[in-house]
Image (cartoon, rainbow, N blue to C red; front, side, top):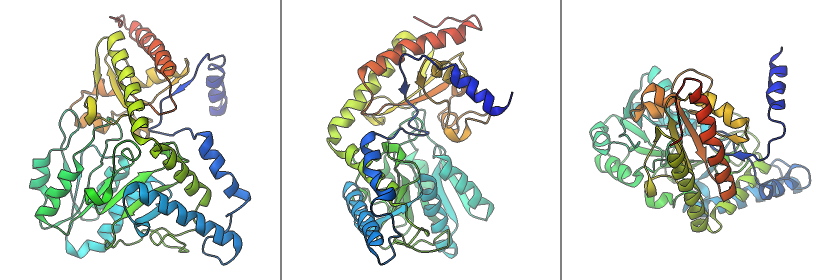
Length: 408
């Protein structure tokens, strides 16, 4: 049987589902109809031209991109000139880190990050280490908070950039970024501070001017926008080298023809996220807590990964199920229409535990037994109730294979 035939057999096993609940927002999001409707005209009706060219479709595209820049800048508390569209979170993080080191190579050679950053940061700094830069990864505690004292000790005259995420992508820890920036700048003001704010944007109050960061990444799919677009905020006065060369359009740091439909979609998704922002956040937080509390009431031997309460992102649920393999659990849940992920998206095909869960002290069997779920303003109480019906039964069945029990 070919790979395609195997996939079709798996899909046939999902036929007849009575309900489907998609929680895998970390790895790929669904796009709401309002966002799709906003994008569609830009594919073939208007603004389909190159925004650098002097004709009507080009001017329309330029107008759409500038309007999008203005709106997103407003949500971030920054200026239009500080908004740089990229093809996504990975590209923005690469641009921030590699662009800084290319520019500052002669000024020093130390990069500071944490042990729990996304792989688009971790893998980049590991690559830069091979090219002679010194890398220090700050440890975290059991809830994933960075050790600020270790950060203070790590900053020295050779440090050129610090990169710490505002919210952890896997366990939802809201980091003390303002305090971290103050520590770094008090020791050496010209060190650049970058934060991947992809999991903070639209989830917690965020103002880059107040945070005093030099660069920040945000991502469209993390707020239910289309894949293939993100933003790197670069504070006025900060200079980066481009990491790709080619035709330069409206984006001075990223060459190529801008993808106007995706930029418009990202902007529409942002508008929806920030419309009634506090109401959206409260709604997600209530669903999050209902899901966490329901699992803890129904299932034994489970651990919450990350903090509880206001120091956790309002959408994030990450739980380890002991005596239960996470990949097997994702398959079992999928067969009942509940879609989650096990570990991080970039490592799910490799037999190794999440680096984030290892960093917070989880044993390998705990890390392998974890599932990540993210709620949205589109989920309902009925979705959560269905998940709470399916999850305990799925865990019980898998544990039953080894003769263990699950329900309290």
